[in-house]
Length: 88
Image (cartoon, rainbow, N blue to C red; front, side, top):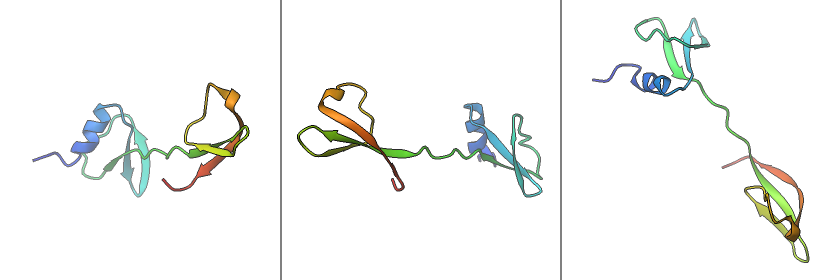
């Protein structure tokens, strides 16, 4: 039988930050008291990284949309800007 906080303990051992809840308030803790019955624990939620479409004008052609920025070979296109993507 797994420990109640098995997944959280493994994540913490792997370097993830852990949050504990006491009196309806989540706080970050460096040393979780896994044995305490009056605490709940969770892996600290990470903010999602924003995703963009990068827009280029290809000379003599049309617009080009890419999911990553072109770091070399700018001779073929002119960078216009980026569009934030709301949905995956």
